[in-house]
Length: 199
Image (cartoon, rainbow, N blue to C red):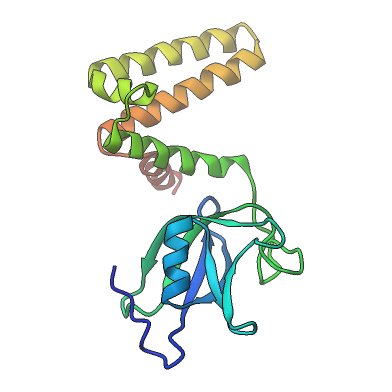
């Protein structure tokens, strides 16, 4: 990735931090080449502090680190967008964001994380992974598992066993997400379809 650290005489470029799970913009900091390289090496966001004139890893004092998920640059290669997972409130005031916004921690956002995890498994196919074994088994086997989990979900619903209903429905959703990924789709495509129908 080409990054233009020389556009400003300070050698600094803005780095926008976005929550990987909620997509909420958390803060804005500045990086030079050294802080960028340290961020890559450690997997934790490191800025250059314009006040202290030194490198500063976010969370080194509070413990509220920002674990990097991805880094991209804008069209001019002089601004970074860093998607990260925050370990706690991001602002020094104790707020979730530097704009005093609440960063939702709704478990619903985990579906996005799980979909990305499944997509990575499809590419990497690590040995010993159940998800890997599903991808290797092919369409028919994955579809069969979706059917089995659907039947088990229905059985628990009819038995009024709410705890087992949620358990089996979770299995159903997971296997459906694997099937979608196997076919080149994601749960977002289902959201798009449902949104169209809602109109």
